[in-house]
Image (tube, rainbow, N blue to C red; front, side):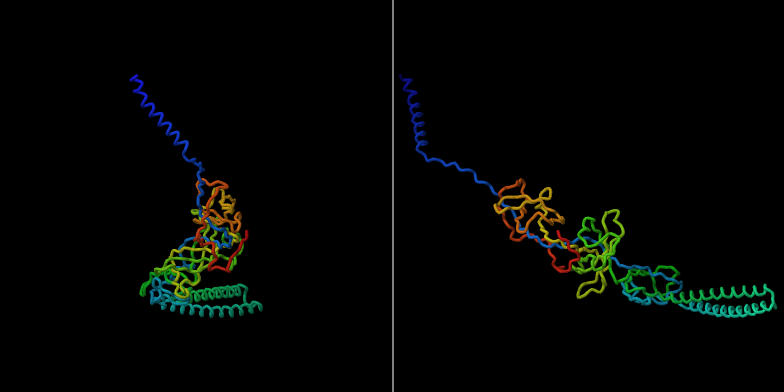
Length: 407
């Protein structure tokens, strides 16, 4: 009996606790089960606005003179005078006397040649008269045929001597003229190795000159970029008006500078090392620039922007917006993703130029989604400051298209 009382108390407490818990659960409020809300990612978007795009091709090169020459002494002698322009960097004009060599020896040689010429002329006159007399006497049979032949031989020798004397006189005149080294064009001195009093030999190079009518830049361009430029590599004539224009840029005297020019030709072969096509751009009168533009100096390393064709109805998007297989996503009016097959006209840096596949006004998804699927709901956020693509604006080249292509 005592043992029963010992265990009965705890059992009553447990039963009472269970009954209380059941009462609380039975009288408590009902819980509503709610589904977890769908997570809709926000994506950066832009409005597709097809527009004309002027393509450009960028290349780099070093400014070179169009014409470069070695100034060579054509006669030997002591240098009497040197022009003040005959220093490295000196400017000269066509016809300027750059170097003068002592003339006295060549003046004497010319006088001797002229004297020999006069003697040869006299000998020829006598030989002609002698032959004429011998010919008349032979007809009257007063002299033998051999005497007439001797007279004819002396006449032939006299004529040859006259030709030789003429040639020697002309050479002496040329040698005398060559004692003055005259500038062949408007130009500048690159290097010089001559001073007054110095003795120079015939054929000795005394200076290096270059012209300043045009400066040239050799621009290597990839073959895949050639389709964006209005030029032909075939055996046809590219008129100057249709050749691509080019803008050369370089920092000079502490400021960013630019010089306009034009591509004038292509080199005859692909570069065997780089497999690129070399275009030659020219800038007229590089040392006579307008306003405050500094001269385009030979040796300057420049970046060239070659102005290409204009293509219509092009959409420019960040390169990261492209998906595999030349596809991208657009956001429909219902906020769902839809993929589009697009034609990629060109990829440059971080920009993709699309032709076809995107209609005007469609919302293009720019964000990179790791696991995007067709029909996925997204929350579009249009960029308040959309990226600006420099090649998508005609800017300073409006109305001056070199070639236009429509899709």
